[in-house]
Image (cartoon, rainbow, N blue to C red; front, side):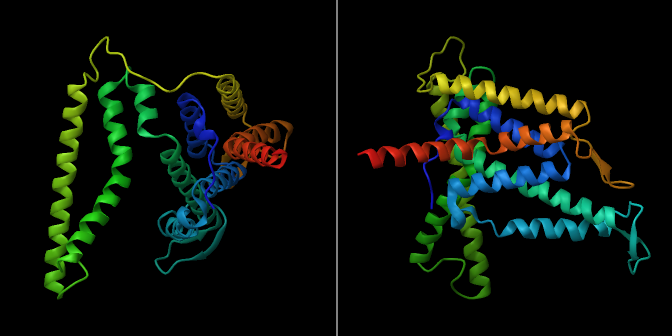
Length: 296
Protein backbone atom coordinates (compact mmCIF):
# COMPACT_ATOMS: atom_id res chain seq x y z
CA UNK A 1 0.00 0.00 0.00
CA UNK A 2 1.35 3.42 -0.96
CA UNK A 3 1.41 6.04 1.80
CA UNK A 4 1.56 9.80 1.83
CA UNK A 5 5.19 10.71 2.37
CA UNK A 6 5.63 13.42 4.99
CA UNK A 7 9.37 13.70 4.41
CA UNK A 8 8.75 14.89 0.83
CA UNK A 9 7.00 17.94 2.25
CA UNK A 10 10.16 19.20 3.92
CA UNK A 11 12.36 21.87 2.38
CA UNK A 12 14.29 20.73 -0.72
CA UNK A 13 17.60 21.43 1.00
CA UNK A 14 16.66 19.00 3.78
CA UNK A 15 15.69 16.33 1.24
CA UNK A 16 18.84 16.80 -0.81
CA UNK A 17 21.16 16.81 2.21
CA UNK A 18 19.62 13.60 3.53
CA UNK A 19 20.14 11.72 0.28
CA UNK A 20 23.65 13.13 -0.06
CA UNK A 21 24.52 11.79 3.40
CA UNK A 22 22.99 8.34 3.00
CA UNK A 23 24.35 7.83 -0.51
CA UNK A 24 27.79 9.04 0.52
CA UNK A 25 27.75 6.82 3.60
CA UNK A 26 26.61 3.82 1.60
CA UNK A 27 29.41 4.18 -0.93
CA UNK A 28 32.16 5.04 1.57
CA UNK A 29 31.44 2.90 4.64
CA UNK A 30 32.10 -0.75 3.80
CA UNK A 31 31.65 -1.98 7.35
CA UNK A 32 29.19 -4.94 7.27
CA UNK A 33 27.00 -3.36 9.93
CA UNK A 34 26.88 -0.07 8.00
CA UNK A 35 25.93 -1.86 4.79
CA UNK A 36 23.14 -3.77 6.52
CA UNK A 37 21.82 -0.56 8.10
CA UNK A 38 21.85 1.32 4.79
CA UNK A 39 20.23 -1.54 2.86
CA UNK A 40 17.52 -2.04 5.50
CA UNK A 41 16.81 1.70 5.68
CA UNK A 42 16.62 2.06 1.91
CA UNK A 43 14.39 -1.01 1.63
CA UNK A 44 12.02 0.26 4.33
CA UNK A 45 11.71 3.70 2.78
CA UNK A 46 11.25 2.30 -0.73
CA UNK A 47 8.46 0.01 0.46
CA UNK A 48 6.81 2.90 2.27
CA UNK A 49 6.97 5.11 -0.82
CA UNK A 50 6.03 2.65 -3.55
CA UNK A 51 4.83 -0.51 -1.85
CA UNK A 52 5.91 -4.08 -2.54
CA UNK A 53 4.53 -4.31 -6.07
CA UNK A 54 5.74 -0.96 -7.37
CA UNK A 55 9.07 -1.34 -5.63
CA UNK A 56 10.10 -4.26 -7.88
CA UNK A 57 12.35 -5.62 -5.15
CA UNK A 58 12.87 -9.06 -6.60
CA UNK A 59 16.01 -7.97 -8.43
CA UNK A 60 17.87 -7.07 -5.23
CA UNK A 61 18.78 -10.64 -4.19
CA UNK A 62 19.87 -11.28 -7.77
CA UNK A 63 22.26 -8.33 -7.64
CA UNK A 64 23.83 -9.55 -4.42
CA UNK A 65 24.04 -13.12 -5.73
CA UNK A 66 25.60 -12.10 -9.05
CA UNK A 67 28.31 -9.99 -7.43
CA UNK A 68 28.99 -12.74 -4.89
CA UNK A 69 29.53 -15.19 -7.77
CA UNK A 70 31.35 -12.92 -10.23
CA UNK A 71 33.77 -11.29 -7.80
CA UNK A 72 35.56 -14.53 -6.75
CA UNK A 73 35.88 -15.46 -10.43
CA UNK A 74 38.06 -12.40 -11.09
CA UNK A 75 39.33 -11.45 -7.62
CA UNK A 76 41.57 -14.05 -5.99
CA UNK A 77 42.94 -12.02 -3.09
CA UNK A 78 42.61 -13.20 0.47
CA UNK A 79 44.36 -15.51 2.87
CA UNK A 80 41.58 -18.02 3.56
CA UNK A 81 41.66 -20.41 0.59
CA UNK A 82 38.56 -22.58 0.36
CA UNK A 83 39.36 -24.48 -2.84
CA UNK A 84 40.86 -24.02 -6.27
CA UNK A 85 38.97 -23.19 -9.44
CA UNK A 86 39.41 -25.28 -12.63
CA UNK A 87 41.66 -22.49 -13.94
CA UNK A 88 44.01 -23.04 -11.00
CA UNK A 89 43.18 -19.75 -9.26
CA UNK A 90 42.27 -19.93 -5.57
CA UNK A 91 38.75 -19.36 -4.30
CA UNK A 92 39.04 -17.33 -1.09
CA UNK A 93 36.57 -16.56 1.63
CA UNK A 94 37.50 -12.89 1.58
CA UNK A 95 36.64 -12.52 -2.10
CA UNK A 96 33.22 -14.11 -1.57
CA UNK A 97 32.42 -11.90 1.41
CA UNK A 98 33.64 -8.82 -0.46
CA UNK A 99 31.39 -9.75 -3.39
CA UNK A 100 28.40 -9.98 -1.05
CA UNK A 101 29.33 -6.62 0.50
CA UNK A 102 29.71 -5.00 -2.92
CA UNK A 103 26.35 -6.40 -3.99
CA UNK A 104 24.68 -5.09 -0.85
CA UNK A 105 26.22 -1.67 -1.45
CA UNK A 106 25.01 -1.63 -5.06
CA UNK A 107 21.50 -2.71 -4.06
CA UNK A 108 21.34 -0.03 -1.35
CA UNK A 109 22.53 2.67 -3.76
CA UNK A 110 19.90 1.64 -6.32
CA UNK A 111 17.17 1.74 -3.67
CA UNK A 112 18.26 5.12 -2.34
CA UNK A 113 18.32 6.53 -5.87
CA UNK A 114 14.84 5.17 -6.52
CA UNK A 115 13.65 6.97 -3.38
CA UNK A 116 15.53 10.08 -4.51
CA UNK A 117 13.62 10.22 -7.78
CA UNK A 118 10.34 10.01 -5.86
CA UNK A 119 11.20 12.75 -3.35
CA UNK A 120 13.55 15.13 -5.20
CA UNK A 121 11.40 16.26 -8.10
CA UNK A 122 12.78 18.37 -10.94
CA UNK A 123 11.30 21.59 -9.55
CA UNK A 124 13.08 21.00 -6.23
CA UNK A 125 16.40 20.42 -7.95
CA UNK A 126 16.04 23.53 -10.12
CA UNK A 127 15.04 25.53 -7.03
CA UNK A 128 18.24 24.52 -5.22
CA UNK A 129 20.76 24.89 -8.06
CA UNK A 130 18.98 27.04 -10.65
CA UNK A 131 20.72 30.25 -9.60
CA UNK A 132 24.12 28.70 -8.91
CA UNK A 133 24.43 26.42 -11.96
CA UNK A 134 21.44 27.18 -14.21
CA UNK A 135 22.56 25.20 -17.27
CA UNK A 136 23.78 22.17 -15.31
CA UNK A 137 20.73 22.08 -13.03
CA UNK A 138 18.38 22.19 -16.02
CA UNK A 139 20.33 19.43 -17.74
CA UNK A 140 20.32 17.20 -14.66
CA UNK A 141 16.64 17.90 -14.06
CA UNK A 142 15.79 16.88 -17.62
CA UNK A 143 17.97 13.77 -17.30
CA UNK A 144 16.37 12.64 -14.03
CA UNK A 145 12.85 12.92 -15.37
CA UNK A 146 13.75 11.50 -18.78
CA UNK A 147 13.43 7.84 -17.79
CA UNK A 148 9.84 7.93 -16.43
CA UNK A 149 8.69 10.19 -19.29
CA UNK A 150 10.41 7.97 -21.85
CA UNK A 151 8.73 4.87 -20.41
CA UNK A 152 5.29 6.50 -20.52
CA UNK A 153 5.78 7.75 -24.08
CA UNK A 154 7.14 4.38 -25.18
CA UNK A 155 4.00 2.69 -23.90
CA UNK A 156 1.83 5.23 -25.72
CA UNK A 157 3.69 4.77 -29.01
CA UNK A 158 3.62 1.00 -28.70
CA UNK A 159 -0.14 0.94 -28.08
CA UNK A 160 -0.69 3.21 -31.07
CA UNK A 161 1.45 0.97 -33.30
CA UNK A 162 -0.31 -2.12 -31.99
CA UNK A 163 -3.68 -0.74 -33.09
CA UNK A 164 -2.45 -0.63 -36.71
CA UNK A 165 -0.71 -4.01 -36.52
CA UNK A 166 2.85 -2.69 -36.29
CA UNK A 167 3.83 -3.69 -32.78
CA UNK A 168 7.08 -5.52 -32.04
CA UNK A 169 5.06 -8.58 -30.97
CA UNK A 170 3.10 -8.87 -34.22
CA UNK A 171 3.98 -10.50 -37.53
CA UNK A 172 6.96 -12.57 -38.60
CA UNK A 173 10.44 -12.24 -37.15
CA UNK A 174 11.50 -9.85 -39.90
CA UNK A 175 8.33 -7.79 -39.43
CA UNK A 176 8.88 -7.65 -35.68
CA UNK A 177 12.42 -6.37 -36.17
CA UNK A 178 11.17 -3.75 -38.60
CA UNK A 179 8.41 -2.66 -36.22
CA UNK A 180 10.90 -2.45 -33.34
CA UNK A 181 13.19 -0.21 -35.39
CA UNK A 182 10.20 1.98 -36.29
CA UNK A 183 9.18 2.38 -32.65
CA UNK A 184 12.77 3.15 -31.67
CA UNK A 185 12.99 5.78 -34.43
CA UNK A 186 9.76 7.40 -33.23
CA UNK A 187 11.07 7.52 -29.66
CA UNK A 188 14.40 9.07 -30.66
CA UNK A 189 12.61 11.73 -32.68
CA UNK A 190 10.25 12.46 -29.80
CA UNK A 191 13.12 12.72 -27.31
CA UNK A 192 15.06 15.17 -29.50
CA UNK A 193 11.99 17.32 -30.17
CA UNK A 194 11.10 17.32 -26.46
CA UNK A 195 14.60 18.44 -25.50
CA UNK A 196 14.55 21.27 -28.08
CA UNK A 197 11.10 22.42 -26.96
CA UNK A 198 12.18 22.44 -23.32
CA UNK A 199 15.33 24.41 -24.10
CA UNK A 200 13.41 26.96 -26.18
CA UNK A 201 10.75 27.29 -23.50
CA UNK A 202 13.27 27.93 -20.73
CA UNK A 203 15.20 30.37 -22.92
CA UNK A 204 12.05 32.35 -23.73
CA UNK A 205 11.36 32.64 -20.00
CA UNK A 206 14.79 34.13 -19.39
CA UNK A 207 16.10 31.15 -17.47
CA UNK A 208 19.69 31.66 -16.34
CA UNK A 209 19.78 35.40 -17.01
CA UNK A 210 21.26 37.59 -14.25
CA UNK A 211 18.70 39.35 -12.06
CA UNK A 212 15.89 37.02 -13.04
CA UNK A 213 13.40 36.38 -10.26
CA UNK A 214 11.39 33.20 -9.84
CA UNK A 215 8.31 32.18 -7.92
CA UNK A 216 8.85 29.56 -5.25
CA UNK A 217 6.47 27.61 -3.05
CA UNK A 218 9.23 26.48 -0.70
CA UNK A 219 9.69 28.34 2.57
CA UNK A 220 11.64 27.62 5.71
CA UNK A 221 9.60 26.40 8.64
CA UNK A 222 10.53 25.41 12.16
CA UNK A 223 10.45 21.71 11.33
CA UNK A 224 12.82 22.29 8.39
CA UNK A 225 15.34 24.02 10.64
CA UNK A 226 15.16 21.23 13.20
CA UNK A 227 15.54 18.59 10.50
CA UNK A 228 18.53 20.45 9.05
CA UNK A 229 20.21 20.61 12.46
CA UNK A 230 19.60 16.88 12.91
CA UNK A 231 21.12 16.04 9.54
CA UNK A 232 24.15 18.25 10.23
CA UNK A 233 24.62 16.51 13.59
CA UNK A 234 24.44 13.09 11.93
CA UNK A 235 26.84 14.13 9.19
CA UNK A 236 29.39 15.55 11.62
CA UNK A 237 29.11 12.48 13.84
CA UNK A 238 29.67 10.15 10.89
CA UNK A 239 32.70 12.11 9.67
CA UNK A 240 34.26 12.30 13.13
CA UNK A 241 33.57 8.62 13.76
CA UNK A 242 35.15 7.67 10.43
CA UNK A 243 38.28 9.71 11.17
CA UNK A 244 38.58 8.09 14.59
CA UNK A 245 38.32 4.61 13.06
CA UNK A 246 34.82 3.75 14.21
CA UNK A 247 33.69 2.75 10.69
CA UNK A 248 36.92 1.11 9.57
CA UNK A 249 36.80 -2.28 7.89
CA UNK A 250 38.97 -4.17 5.41
CA UNK A 251 38.41 -7.37 3.44
CA UNK A 252 41.91 -8.10 2.14
CA UNK A 253 44.20 -9.82 2.86
CA UNK A 254 42.15 -10.79 5.93
CA UNK A 255 38.85 -9.42 7.20
CA UNK A 256 39.48 -7.04 10.03
CA UNK A 257 38.06 -3.76 11.23
CA UNK A 258 36.55 -1.81 14.07
CA UNK A 259 35.20 -4.12 16.72
CA UNK A 260 32.38 -3.61 19.17
CA UNK A 261 33.49 -0.52 21.08
CA UNK A 262 31.66 2.48 22.46
CA UNK A 263 32.78 4.61 19.52
CA UNK A 264 31.69 2.08 16.90
CA UNK A 265 28.33 1.46 18.58
CA UNK A 266 27.56 5.19 18.91
CA UNK A 267 28.48 5.96 15.31
CA UNK A 268 26.47 3.02 13.98
CA UNK A 269 23.46 4.08 16.06
CA UNK A 270 23.66 7.59 14.63
CA UNK A 271 23.92 6.12 11.13
CA UNK A 272 20.92 3.88 11.88
CA UNK A 273 18.89 6.88 13.06
CA UNK A 274 19.87 8.83 9.95
CA UNK A 275 18.84 6.08 7.52
CA UNK A 276 15.48 5.64 9.23
CA UNK A 277 14.75 9.37 9.58
CA UNK A 278 12.20 9.54 6.71
CA UNK A 279 10.38 6.41 7.86
CA UNK A 280 10.27 7.70 11.45
CA UNK A 281 8.85 11.04 10.30
CA UNK A 282 6.27 9.29 8.12
CA UNK A 283 5.23 6.97 10.94
CA UNK A 284 4.84 9.91 13.29
CA UNK A 285 2.62 11.71 10.79
CA UNK A 286 0.56 8.55 10.28
CA UNK A 287 0.09 8.24 14.02
CA UNK A 288 -1.02 11.88 14.28
CA UNK A 289 -3.47 11.43 11.43
CA UNK A 290 -5.00 8.32 12.98
CA UNK A 291 -5.21 10.07 16.35
CA UNK A 292 -7.06 13.00 14.76
CA UNK A 293 -9.49 10.66 13.01
CA UNK A 294 -10.26 8.93 16.30
CA UNK A 295 -10.97 12.30 17.93
CA UNK A 296 -13.38 13.20 15.14
